[in-house]
Structures are given as structure tokens and as C-alpha cells.
Length: 217
Image 1 (cartoon, rainbow, N blue to C red):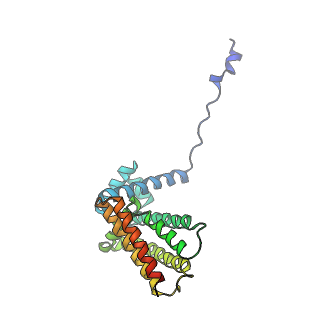
Image 2: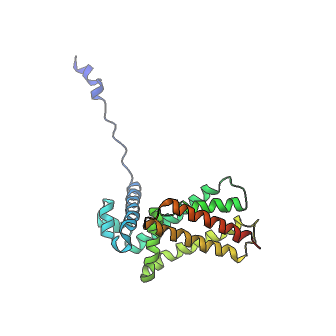
Image 3: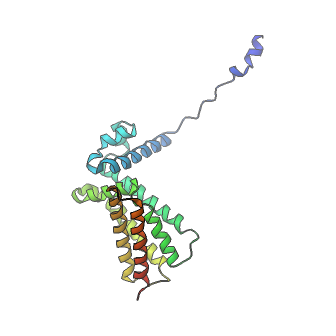
């Protein structure tokens, strides 16, 4: 085999190197790792244990890299809450797609909420919301997100229930508050290792109670 043949042999073909990621792509991947590790640690060891150094270690990044993306723990926790609020919005939108107006849509929305019970994301959000009582910086960082999400759910419920009761009926807000309480309370029960079958039985009972509340004059 001569040198000319060797030049065109398969082994001598140029190696196709993967395109280098942009700085923006690398930063986005770093943030994704940090947020995912934050949720894991908040779920496993709670807010106090989920320090920024522990989160950085779990994410496989340096503390400096974490602080470059999120200079304060309050800012990082606010990002976790925003991500969870976005995931809830998307879950609600998927659940309502193609569902008839009135009570069917309301029950579909409720079931989307129940699907979050006991998830790592919800427990992480609960840890953050509990911690804000003693942390003014955290309360300031997440307060706007929580307020906007609550307002969004109020508007959504009022629109869904428009054909069932008046949007101004105080029962709309009552249902929203009780739904949150049930969702958070049953998530706590999952942490206590209550069997899922019992959780689902409680959810079914609550759905029946909500229908009676909304349809009884």
C-alpha cells in the first residue's frame, strides 16, 4: 500500500470534534445543576442543612461558581421557588387542555395539584416558605413570586368556575386556601411515610367536599 492510499484510508479521516458550548450554554448547565441539587438537599436535609457550600458540592461546582450565578442563598432559594412556580403553571396548563368548562376543568386543575403532593419540588418549596418567617432577606426575595403565583391561581380559579358560581363569590378564595392547605398538609404526611393509598383516599374525600362546597347554595 503506497503513501497516497494511506492518505485516504478511513483511519486517517479528520476527527469530527463536538462543537464547543457557548458561555451561555455552560452557565445554563451550571444553574441547572445548582437548582437540581438545591431541591435534592432541601428535600433530604431541610433548609438549614442545605447551605450554599453543601449545594455546590452536590452540584459538582465550586462555591465561587455557585456564587457567580447566585451571589446569596436568598437569591438561590428565590430561583428554586420561581422554577417550581413555573412547573406548577405548566402542569396546570397541560391538565386543562381539552377539558370541558365548569366542574370538569376545576377537578382537572385539582388533580394536577394533587400530583405534586410529596414531590421533592413541593417539599423543597415548603422548606423555603417556612424558613422565610425568620429570614427577612429570604422573605423579600421570594415574596413577589409567591404573591404573583397566588394571584394567578385566583384568576384561574375564578375563570374556571365562572359557569358554576360568581367569580366574586368568597368560596373561590376559600377553595384556593383549603387546596393549598390540603396539598401542603398531605405532603407532610408523605414525609411521615403515610401510605400513598391513604393519601389518595383523603384526596378523593376532599374533592367530594369541594364539589359540595361549590354547588350547594
